[in-house]
Length: 69
View 1 (cartoon, rainbow, N blue to C red):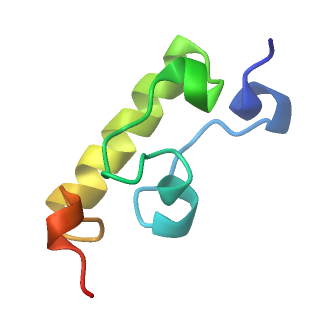
View 2 (tube, rainbow, N blue to C red):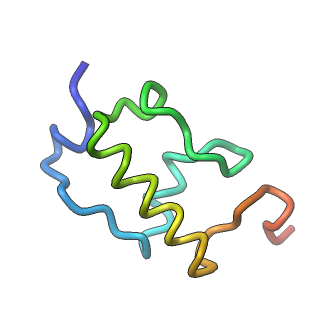
């Protein structure tokens, strides 16, 4: 199984691209596992750091209860 980011040649994960990051979190806004995301360890860590930074900068919610209805 090949990493999606390695195939596409993506080396940098931008924390400001929340639509892209949303694909890699669950419906509860938890960061999905590398098996579900089909990412290698290196890119899973980069993705996790980008999601955490987006949460800190208030671009993504921490939990499902924080979303606007």
